[in-house]
Image (cartoon, rainbow, N blue to C red; front, side):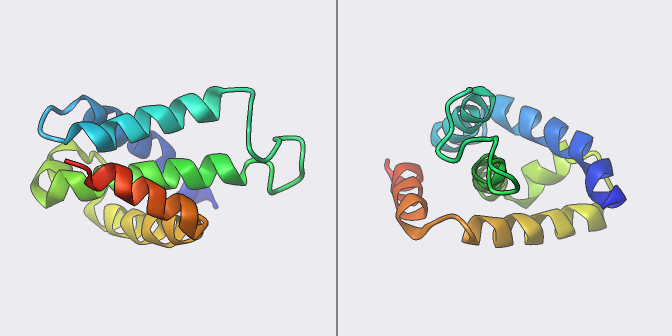
Length: 118
């Protein structure tokens, strides 16, 4: 758990840098900004006062958005922006892939369609 907390600043820095990078397509960046706005909003699909599941929608949406940014960035851009240990980034990517898989399929399908529009 301590390791997970230590990686949060690196993830925040990575997300900020990827959102600002013009080489990343607009839609993944828009998804990330939208996810952040949703997390900061007092309106939630699952109210935060519900134990455990209350924050789950926030965490999963952030994971999905960061995963989309990472995939859109590609390895070279990603390595330019990552400030943590390389092995940690590999673990983060595995966890984000796993977490993105927990998002209900209708939402995943809708977000994939949004990201793949030209």
